[in-house]
Length: 488
Ligand code: AMP
Image (cartoon, rainbow, N blue to C red; front, side):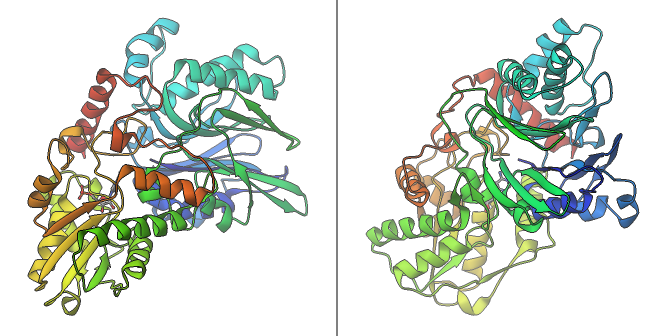
């Protein structure tokens, strides 16, 4: 999971301010590194490890000029997470191409082992980031096709070659020096990507980003989400061209709605906020079936807040923000080992005793991955004197690793893997544990979306929509995750 933005404005304008505003608005998609490449008559770049505000300073603004720009925030899922892997990547010769992506290449190891040594025996990959594979395959095709100029068909055939060779789920934005801006979405549309536009005194500007919130803050109006397998080309006169490169069923990632996206985002015309509220409501209906009385519904902040509000409303009990989150502690999930993760839960969430003492509380989280957060918060609730501590997750039990770029633990780390719900409950130490049912989750999102929908929900069901996930791929990804956590 990462975030990107790409903007093309009229020649003579500068897009850097909008690019940086956009990146800050999707900082939640990656806090590990940030980078921007702009183009006026040449590429200018600034990249570094850390948050956007740590990487960029006023002094960089003067240099990062140009009417085209690509920005990226990184959450490393593949690779060692060092400086070499910071996006965007770019090539200068024989065609200038800059690129950033969100997602994961599932056959990256295979490409490194077999494909690249075969097609380019003297070449080598410079980074351990899978974007490099996309960039080289795309660039080779553009070089072969272009005859003095680049048009939408050249871009579409390059994307088609990428889809044939580079497997996985990735949405991509980029620019071709002096020619225009491109964007494409993976054949199953697993990763989000949205197009917006803004009219200005010098003409229209286009922006393509991972989340609609980027468009909102940078003042772009939403045009539409890209279709699964669609390639966009915006030429140098800012004419928009679209080509449908693949025709697979659309399966957007359901976990974006549950956890990853901001609540004020809209993905594929589904409001993340509405989705979370309705997931809370659906779970409340199931909770009633348990017959257990509760004094309050308490969210694990922040993703669970809308769902907990709706759940409390539906159950007609108070909603209490009884855990206060310190926003300045990093995400607990990305701490290198379990001990640190547990300590950081305590640093991050502080309870308000009066809301627990002598009460039966229902604590709601978006998901339970390793169970560290749940174990800790249940323990804290008991320490605060709660009479009963019930726990609910508005997503179903996570059981299968995500090969498409959601950092979802290796399979042996999932607390629910190979355990019954009762065993998970014991493991976590709560008095009752309720998960959302897969069918309730899908029905709820379908209803919010207002029409028949299907999603990638492989992390809950093991049904990988690309149909090409092998045990070997999962093992390679698992090895990468373990190496990354050892090296951090
Ligand atoms: P755990 O303590 O491992 O069970 O993690 C559960 C918590 O991590 C939940 O509260 C989620 O909000 C959060 N979470 C779930 N998936 C992810 C992810 N892919 N990256 C970071 N955090 C996550």
